[in-house]
Length: 400
Length: 86
Image 1 (cartoon, rainbow over the protein chains, first blue to last red):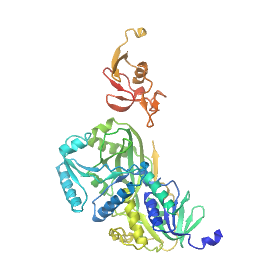
Image 2 (tube, chains in turn brown, red):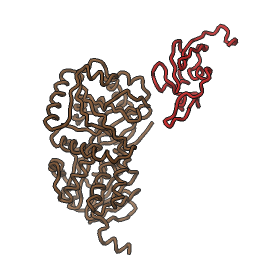
Image 3 (cartoon, helix red, strand yellow):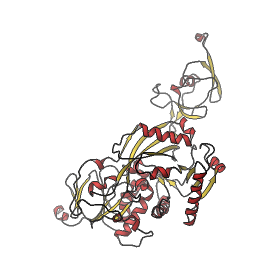
């Protein structure tokens, strides 16, 4: 009987990867009544999801980025109402810190941008910034406050979304890696075949392992976490120079980026590196990152850091994720390429993708994220692609 | 402390009380001499104190001069130090 069942599709949709993006997608599909599978080789939310900061941010690099981050932020607010305590969702707000008057001009530009689009926003002058964050270096020019920005603990949120998906009838297939997708079948690394009408690649930097030629590169990041110092920092804080770091494509860069955790711990970031597939902690990068942080917050120097680790963001050339049908593959959809915004945009991505798959109307324009916007050769567009190496297998490594 | 003889003495405050100890001893030793055994509280509220005495276990953390999470076994007493335990 089991053999006969393999000849039909067991699932309507099979999601590859149970990071927060895959978890959110599986939940959306299960909620829509689709027979949904979620396939995860490791632990739920154990890759880039566990490595990231968990800042739920609205961003304005492009209209498309704004639309997806803002839409997602609203979906996060709805999710927060049913999240368990370990999801650690706190709307602490974010401060984009301006060190000088030139950066203050950018604060004013951003304030106009967000106001015009109905996003709550406030400008802090030098004095009120110093009052709001007493551990910042004195003499900062000011900051842009985005009170709707929040923080969360992404691995637990991913687990919660998976549990909701399971309650809605989805099936979690854990401990096996998808080796190939073709002919309506995902073949796992132990030879098991999972038949499905459609597939979703939500496996971050590992997506090109299954679909060769996808324009996704790993962009390595480092984070440090301190011991518990409640009240040292009130808001998620990012230097406006962060944007220079995030946009620089060809060089290693660091930026001041600090986040208060509900535990009282502080997350200190951030770094961006292309061309490194080594998940080890790089002392030089950590040093440069902390030096930058100390310039903004001299008191950080006296605190105890207890751990540092790395992760790999799935970066695309135009800084927008790939959400929608995979070019040349009618039965494969993509939900990857979120770079540093995957936690924020996981919920929007899942909703957009479900709308596309189910041909529902979508609350935001979906074409900017369509994978076929980028011209890339799909080396083997019709046949199945075998895993060529282990590159996609390591997404994060924690170390002391 | 008759055996201390002519040893130099430093005076610090532990939980607000003045304590005189020989110079060169660790804060952990001074806290224990003062009679305090609970150096800090774990996240779940359990009392904790020095275990390894060599800076590895982090159980002996106290607040020194308003700086939290100082490993008392690794820091020598100084005159005027303000030490707070959990």
